Length: 111
Image 1: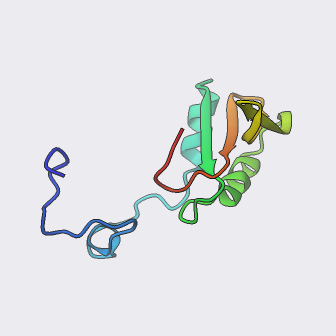
Image 2 (image 1 turned 180 degrees about the vertical axis):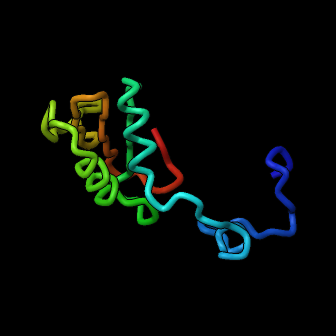
């Protein structure tokens, strides 16, 4: 907490009201679509990854976001393997976008 300059008086939680309340955090951009289109038009490979047990930023919304960007499908959704077991699912789009899910990964547990 010290390295991030966070007061020790603030109780840490997944979505702390001290950080995310309307008084402390103001949403400036409600839709990130224009920014993703700029990045993808610049041919920057982009990975969107989600845990399938994340209830805060769920993979269904990420999948819908990926689909609404209007990119052509390169590789339909398919399982990817880790140690011969399904680790999640991957969808690739022309333009450099990859949408990836990981099984049993939640909001604070990444690859």
